[in-house]
Amino acid sequence: ALQQFSYGFRSNAAIFRYNGFFTRTKTKLTASARQIDPFFRSFGVAYMRSDNLRYELKAEQALSLKIKYTASLRYDEDNLLNLYQYKTKLYTWGNNLQWKMNKRTTLRVAYNPVLQNIKTGETTLKNKNSITNVVVTYIPKTRRVFMQNTAIYSYYNLAADTLQINFQNITFTQQLQFRNGFRSGITSSWYKNGLSDSLSNNTLINVMEGGYQFKNGSSLSIAAKAALYKMQELQGGFSIKGGFTLFKNTTMELQAERIVAGEFYNAYNMEQNLQNFPYY
Image (cartoon, rainbow, N blue to C red; front, side):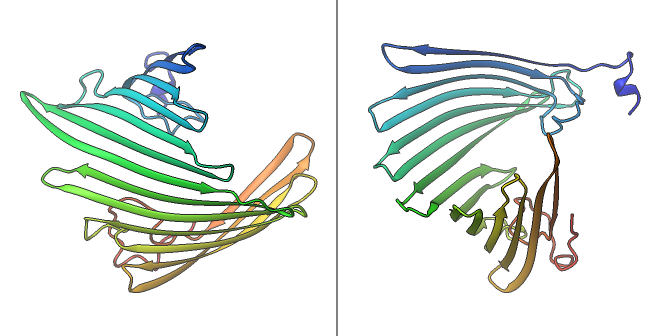
């Protein structure tokens, strides 16, 4: 670990981005290039994927006062220093349509085909994937409370070594914000995919949350969870979150949560350890 931060070992990351706007056609254009070397380490950006080269071109076009279309093309490549025996290339075509149906309702539809090329020696494996999302947002007109309702449908068609995996998710969320500082939220999600041993296969999870926003900026919220795993086993959980203003320009955030089935999208088999899954 010390060697990674010494003068004898160094990895780099760089990004270039160009933003343009064409007044006549009302088109927004974004072009970017990014490279992150293998073993890149930086505090605060640990989520960044290392060993990655990315080129992306995105265009946003207003078709009318209520309809907007966004198209993008992205290229990803790993194994930049040829440290491994395989190289993966991803070609992603993005299509996003947003329709402001009325003052209260917005519809967003996205379809993203992904072509994956995996090369090992002289062998190249080509996989076709696709991601589809439909999002409907409705904000009713109310006087004493702000309400936002969101419905999401996602469909993933992903290629594995020998089969195609279908992943579906339906989520409904309702958020309420009262003028006196109280807020509440309800989230209900259903997950299903083609892997019989996956944790997220045929799982229904519901979350009810209530909280309060203090005038000094502090906040406190408590949530109760209930997950129906494979439509047979019921599991409960909770979440406590707090943000506290200690003094000027200084705040502290605390969170404790009990994880339940349906909150992970991996294939970790928890048949025997589901009840003993750790807190964090």
